[in-house]
Image (cartoon, rainbow over all chains, first blue to last red; front, side):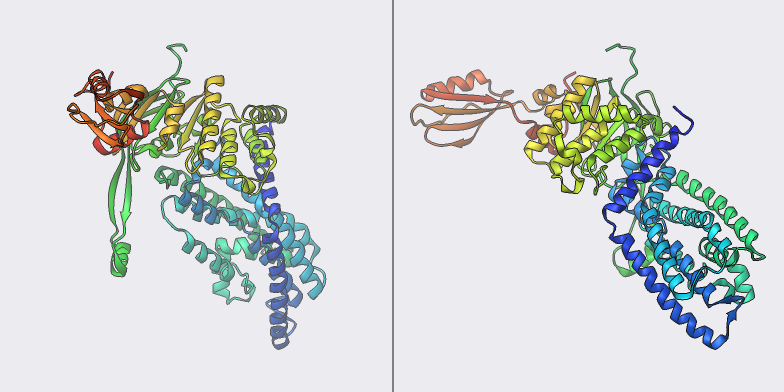
Length: 266
Length: 337
């Protein structure tokens, strides 16, 4: 047995989820079509705005804003959706199977969600980047492109930890739909998906930028268009800090939830 | 089996109490419940003792809400008990859940463990990887299970295209991939047709007899219990109300026999002894229920013989279904041991 042998089971979990996702690829294709439509709509919206405001707003031009939006939407559309899956598993009792296997429960979900979001991530990235490129030309800074293989996994991990924490509430609460809904709306607004945080008033921008929602969507999108900016290192450091904090919260919720779990059925 | 072998299951004074929030009726009630929720306690297990030897096949039966599934979930480490002691294969389930999972196989009724859109073989391979079985050994084991349980090409068909019976056969095979020492079956044949039920029982029996796998089964299906188990434990309202050999349950609980008689010529049956109930009668046949505590079979046969020439006679025991129904509705008997 090699040192990597324990990882084999988690790779196997990711692989079976990829195959399951590819067995029904319509979801991934649908999201890819959605991102193209979103980019086109936002292109027209921001083009009209820039015709009024001038070439740049808060240091960002039309090309920056369209690419920013495309990357933020890639993060949104390839979110790992642990919360509804966990809630459903608790409701229908199938959580029992997830708990009687010799693996770490949270690592199982991490691997499984990697598997079922990888095809979506790949398709939405290609479609979103393609739409942005055709609309406004090449990415504004190639260093941002180089940073993407680091930034997208960090953003994905933050989404995973948040969604899993919400899902783990299903161990004690009956329904987590409201929490999920609020979280997604906070990503759109406080995470800077709809309007970049750079356009917010100073005090609001400062506050929003410190929250985990900004680390999830604003940070990867902003670092894609302004990788060499003055706040770049700070954004990265804050992302890592939120991953550590939310990781601890997720672990604590899991330990607490397990003690209070009520499995339905029978 | 060595008498010093670790017991498959050893449970002492196991209690599980759930706290449930009750919603008040109506809109006003719902709003009040948000502010001041009404909580109450539900005792699922009220202090049970349970022992099971390695390789034994034991049935845990009881009406809905008796605590069977709660017991199974504690035994697998999914739920933590409120108090009491529990060891499964020498391990404390909720503290050593992962280690225990390597030694225990589980089938939870209609809750699928197979990936729905993929062929079952993909799940079996995944479960082998999850149990750290190397690829070559995994393929060998899957081939062995497919051969032993006549799964044939079923493993290569997407699970969504399998019938429920076919799927359950693959589910049982999946629970055996890692060669468990104990199989916990929670309503394994629920919803299956008689042929599929028979095949599932045969699979479990074969695994138990060939590899010495212990089996703990909860079921409402008397056929499951009769086909699989020698010993039975009856739970009611979270307490064990009966534990004994299955045959003793039938003997001790229902002291009645069914006597079906056919005469050579039409007869009139009257003056039957006390303790004999005539359930059905036509010109040449009758079905009698005999309470053997009040009327001996010998005496009943003598009465029937006097009534006319016997063409055929069948004396049968009550079915397990009848026994279980009687236990649930009338309470448990004293065990014979």
